[in-house]
Image (cartoon, rainbow, N blue to C red):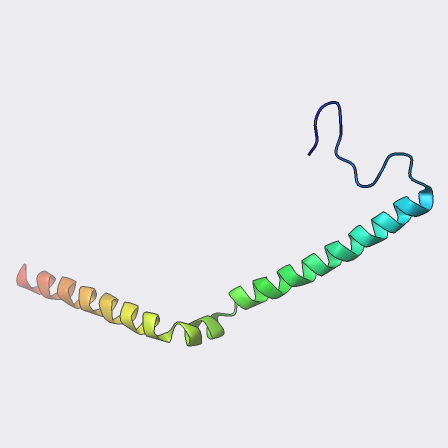
Length: 81
């Protein structure tokens, strides 16, 4: 953890240029892996066809409920005329 008198650092102070380059390369690889994992997760969550297949029952129940409520509202509208 970083404090005012002790900044957050990776590795030890006084590292050689080669050690710093290795750390940078390692961080770059980890970032690339993280970005790829995030991209895969975003694709998975935004695939609406897959979501519809996996939640078919919930979609049918929701559509039936909305249809029922719309029907009730239409019937009430006819009564008031």
